[in-house]
Length: 531
Image (tube, rainbow, N blue to C red; front, side, top):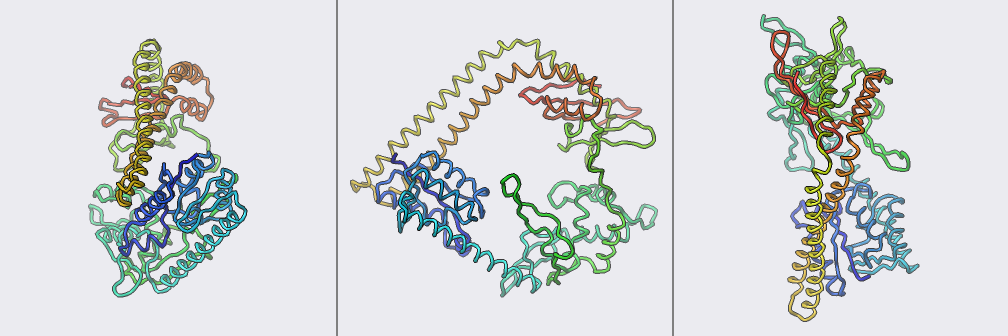
């Protein structure tokens, strides 16, 4: 085994240096390590570039792939600028890295030292280096947190996320950031005014608006929500509760917490209690007065949402399956207390889709499934065999071409080393050539993986054709026997991915244009008959 790999990752120091114009860190490290490989005659066959930041292996996909390949004994060694680049996580992460290299016998090559995991002294030095790297990381993290708290106490904006209605600006002649109102500041002021004082109606009276009426008015005025889409009932309360609009800075409201679930570290951001929440006066301008903000909090406290019971029974057989054709959102059941039938509607006030009786849509879904099954069973499976055989042959040919290309890249890399040793290639030409070959190798490998995935998918499709019809027939035979909406929903979910719902006109005096399209869990779609 004579293949080697390179692992590149930016540190926080590198990111700060790049921000000050010191160039692309990964590019500099790539050139340096390729020159080191050329100097030592090492055949580099793959370069892993970590482009995401994370303090644990679980948040670094390239590191996960590298460890998998190292454990598979693909490389004789891995080149890295320093061992600290491999792991700065906790002792578990450090142990995973150390164990992968030790058990596979893979060497770690840095510009200053080569670590042989089979050597007891090198192993101790390697583990000590990872430990010191973790200490350095925690020291940097403590310093950064202390800097954030100091800026917070000075009234500066320290969060990365900017509240709707503000933009983040750099303070002049000093470190730190603050907020200034943007073009949406007036929208925030309108939301507080409508909720606390009210808005003028057509007859001139002042009427206080609730959350739903505020959402409807914002959408009618075509004002984009914080996410750039339509407003929803869940987007307004967070604005009303955010003390930044009254000139405060809130810290620790959604602090990250880590817990271990089934052996895996799970991150969450629960809402903080009053005892752990920190509020300081900000130097940014307030958009609403303290009195208006306090009144909004009192009104929110008096009009708390009514969450459903934890063990709520499913009453919609189409729950989670029906999508609106206009906006793509999931449609919901609306019950009535006056004896009227339940309806299925799109819950977004800005959407023009018209609702329908739930039982009408349910019958339409079953009719569509029966129609689709009849059409499917009328077409023999052999009709597709020729097309499938041609597709398999095409994928096999493409896979062979990519494998041949990878073999040619191997030969070109070895030739590049030979030309460098003969003095034909300068170090600059060599590193450029190796970078280009590495790029081509990565592209060919990705294409080969895609082809392999397509081959596997084609096999799954063929198998699906043999299984889909019996599955749909079982659902149709069992549907009327199901006793609850939950049982019916489970049956439909077993064979359907989703149902697209379209209806733009309809009602008591107009003909409906209701139409649905079913999408089975396998690669077939069928259009429904209209009602």
